[in-house]
Image 1 (cartoon, rainbow, N blue to C red):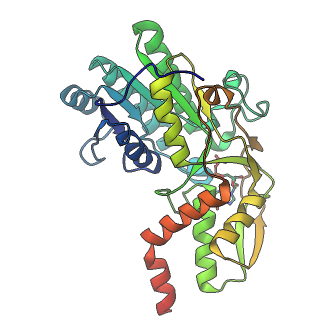
Image 2 (cartoon, rainbow, N blue to C red):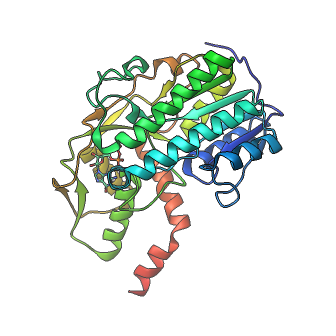
Image 3 (cartoon, rainbow, N blue to C red):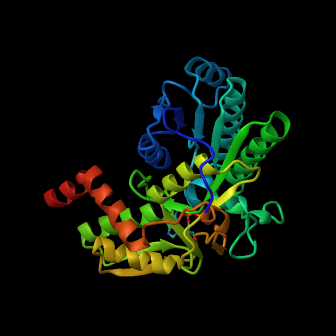
Length: 323
Ligand code: GDP
């Protein structure tokens, strides 16, 4: 197993995007390393504004930057708002990466997504599959911005010797997720839809697409663990895939969520909605070699997300009692 090459204890770490699901999990995990966490809200700093970002980093002097800020969403949001997904994510990546280098930030971790790989990549997908074929059209804008970001990280390493790295996580879920049926990813969207259906006594719920696509899901706390390990142990060009290695069909996911939520109605599939890429299983052997393994099994992890939803959205249950 590999050894630590960098210590996070006592470092000033800026987690960009600390209010999001990934950023919030990273703040908790990196604080456990004894690091001092820096954070700035979206209203305090618009990451799309180059001058503001450069000024903020120069003034606050982090030692380490973790770039978890992004304009994100599920298959519906990506297809409806490609201009925002491309512009925002390109701007955020270039402003934060270049601003960090100018301010002398020692280490930077850029977070991407498994959608950077070609639609018909070999499964499980190795990092070497990058740019070997056309992308999945439903999330092309987001993918192009994330590919540009990881290439910037590589270019700053090549030209300036910056110790900057990238991670490409598989489909994530967990506490802090975007529970929004139209714009969210599949796991939180189906959970919310099934909670509403259960509370309303609805006989069926709709799941988009055929139910046949397969996805690999990772609890966000497992991702945060992998990120902490990468910052301590990884210092090479090229991204590392982060996935748990288990795949499930969307049909299987829907059944598992129904069990977690206690929804007993029928699950119907809406074939007019896009399936997206057929499979997206990552080959994560390189991050396993650093000593990382996920802890959460899917159903237990979804229960954790469900508890979080219950704690945050008591209005759903209150409204059902009144009705
Ligand atoms: P993707 O992995 O980039 O395709 O992201 P998503 O999490 O948005 O979608 C994953 C799969 O779940 C796709 O095949 C969707 O068609 C399917 N899916 C089924 N129901 C839903 C839903 O209510 N919302 C979303 N976002 N996806 C859904």
